Length: 333
Image (cartoon, rainbow, N blue to C red; front, side, top):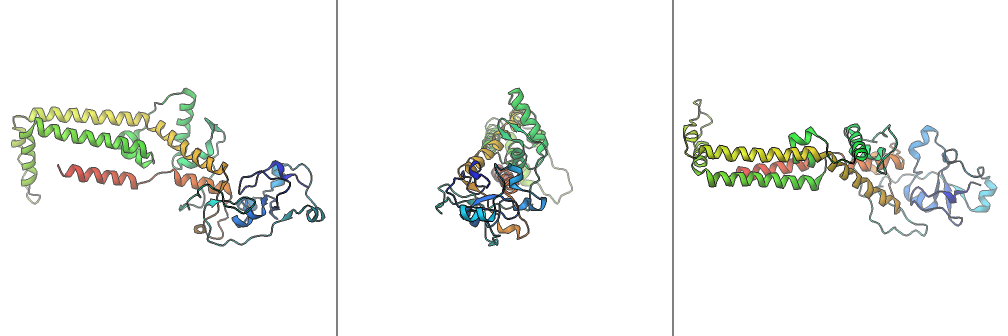
């Protein structure tokens, strides 16, 4: 019979022992703990069955397949198909005593895609799978994979990201770099507030004329607004100087963000992958969510890519919230 002691159960990620109650998939031969198989509801490699996948051929067992008589003697059986309950989500498996693992479960992941295609390029960057990196980046992965390679090879933190230059902290939030995004948003927000305070302090007549113009402006009027009171203010030149300084500070912040955005993003992507990998090493596994329907039979690799894509990828919510905060606060001045 095949010696499964060299392999791990794909559900609980525990090494098989001679005393384990092992069942194998009747289609591909993938071994599972019986309780783990019942927990997942189907073979974890069910998504590969259509390709003719065979666990035994892929892993080259030590001795040939067992006969029915040998199975009866050893207590190892082929697992019958288990119907999907339709109420499954990503969670941790159980150990061989039926006890729940101590680690918290993965949360159900929502996506409009049935799968994130496997990235063609193989290999690793600083010990992290390129396939996992591409799945986590999700959009425009080729660019970031090449950037991450250069960071690893040249040991440099500098790059250039035009999106980060034009959109600043909003770009960081868009790419889910929340720590850096919030930090630079606060820096830029503070710079704007300091600039406004400096204008009121060093150019009060200019600011008063500006406020009067805004207050008295009639949007229905076809006449051009009268800017003479603003340009003729005695402290108008001081106001211009303060605004130039403010623009220079904001430009410098944008340059810093653009230069370090890709390096920040590498750290964010790698942290996501590291966290998920540690959970998987501690016994976590993915169970297909019911949102995919009965026909979307995904294997563990596909569900891992989807989960990484959900944790990574992009979001519009965070930058929109930040923009709304900036708009509301600045409009009060």
